[in-house]
Length: 204
Image (cartoon, rainbow, N blue to C red):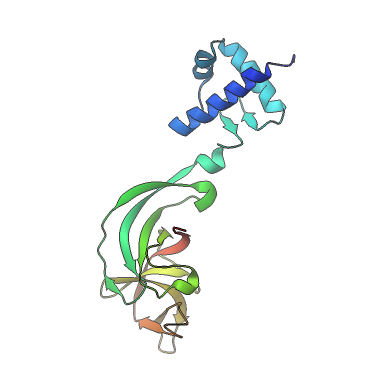
């Protein structure tokens, strides 16, 4: 294939990125052709060559991906920000939706998430400070060592490390602040897991 114009390749690449940022999908051949002022056949040939030259664009005949915007970093998981959760004593559950955000799968993975604003200082050793946004994967199961959103039998919730069970079979929820709450824990007879903390978003 005869080498194509480097300037037009750059324009196509930039247009594809701009389109994907705005619409979260690949532009069609017609979209690109109309913008570039050339035929769809010309764009098709350019995309094939750009796919082969290893410069950061891939084209499979339908989907166009770039180094910056590809399946891994454009797949978004919707999540709602649902107010505060105490990192201390359990409190009555009150869900208040503050906002809705989209989380890129390349950073957070795929799944169903929600985001809670941390309140209190009982989880600082886990890197969770008051005011941080904690990304919770919504699920009803957890393993020992996970940081969980726990809802007990009295419909109170809290964010704690799941510490296993005591000799009486009660569930152990551990504080993670050895300076202020050395070895402090709470136990509940029945625990309902509402999710597992996977990421923390904080201001610098």
